[in-house]
Amino acid sequence: MRHTSRAPNHPAGRRAKRIRVARRGKLADEASMIEALQARCAAAGFASALALATATTPLSASYRAHICPPRRHTFEMKAEYVEKQKEYEAKKARAKALQLRLTCTICGTKPKTLLNCPCGTTQCVPARTGRGRHARARRVPGRYCSTECQRIDWRDRGHRKACKKIRNERAAEAARAEAEAKQAEAPAPPPEEVFYGPAPRSHADEVRARIAAEHEAARLRREANPEPEPQSARWGSRCPICMEDWDVNDSPTIRVCCCRLVCVSCATKFAGKACPLCRASYPSSPSEQLARLRQHVENEVPEAVLQLGYMYRDGMPHLGVPKNLKKAVKIYKRAVELGNVDAAEHLGTMYSQGVGVKLDTEKAKQLFRIASDRGHAVAQGKLAGLLQREECHAESFELYTLAAKQGLTSSEFMAAWYILISPVPEIPEDLEEARRLLTRAAAKGLEAANEFLNEPGYWTNRPPRAVRVEIARTMARSMNAKYPT
Image (cartoon, rainbow, N blue to C red; front, side, top):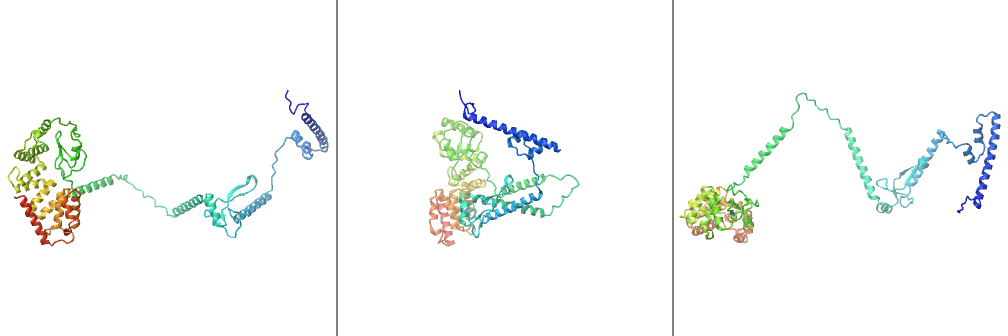
């Protein structure tokens, strides 16, 4: 059987029993004392004898709790005592704050002079005001005895960021208060004028006027810089596949399935493949290719007629087309009648060289002018060459300049040559423009442009105008000798 400390045979249990018996005897003695005192108080005329006896008799705490349950008494302190206690606590707090102000926050020394933290509320020693549960914590502005202590607080204790944040907040608060003060001092806005009548209209009229002004400005820009007219409705101003502008130095390639012209790079990319424009399959044989082309010729498609003229001019035996210059000229004329500018340029070249037809310079100039008026760069360059042979230098230079603006390499070189030689006063002697044109031509692989750029006689020691005029005449005679009229 398990024995506990309260077992009757255990020494500790017997001792606890003796204590309980003694406590009961003591309580009995106190009860007898209370009864005797109550009797005397009743005889003396006290109404609350039990309360008086309980308050005046030195009873034990256990018996007091037994016969008289504890009551919570509230003592009302005098107002003078409360005021004096508050004054004492405030005086004590001021003395403690003064002691902290005279002491370094870090090392606790009392130097003659102390450095204040810029924020005034650094990681300083916390002070408490009040007593007991009414005490509250507050922060005393930090002070340092030296810059070393300040460095410890800022660097080691991480007060630098907190100090900066506090100062920024104070500056923002001061600026906000100043703005509010200015706003309060500002005069009140005048009351809105009351309008009696129909409701005001919206801003739709202003928007319409602005849109109309933008359209007018765009129209003026188009008129000042007109876009070149497409040389063909099918051709357009750029490649229909890659959408890159046409390179005037390369001849485009025709797709016989839809008679659309594409640039050289796209023609190489889709050679032997289905057409990316009309999705037609590639011709399986040369005869099928020629049959497709002739079908478009019968429909009088200008590009197809021009391509057939190419075949008869150069001859393509593998397609079953022999070389026939007279038939090529006839086909070219039909293409010119259909409005193809390339046909006009090719036919003018044949007339200027006397190939397949009788040599006729005037007819060639007429055909070149038809194409050049439509913006054909090659025709402009060839017409300028014919005028140069006739020593019409001013008009020839103008045509060379127009072709050079479109990027024709030979015209860039000839325009720069005209500027350097300047045989007539109408041509400006702009050496920077000449250098720019020659540089562009040299970048495209023209060797003569490099020779002119490296020749110092054209740039530094330039010959007089009479010598330059003679140079131009000599060049015109050499061109006439090479291409007799």
